[in-house]
Length: 71
Image (cartoon, rainbow, N blue to C red; front, side, top):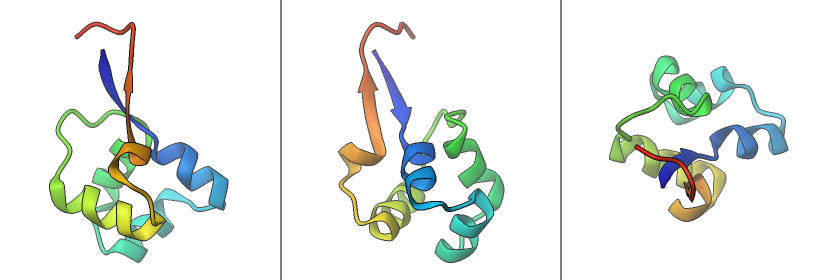
């Protein structure tokens, strides 16, 4: 099982760019980009908090557990 970021889906559904999100939540562009592209290995708590508040979602909607993948 692998944890996957759902940020791309959330952003695309609202027509938001990575740069817009990073600016709106006042966070480093590279960190937001990494999560958008599902390249993040460790998720900073403050980033997760800001994104959940920004998109008005629960953590389970931002991060998903994908079965079948191995670590």
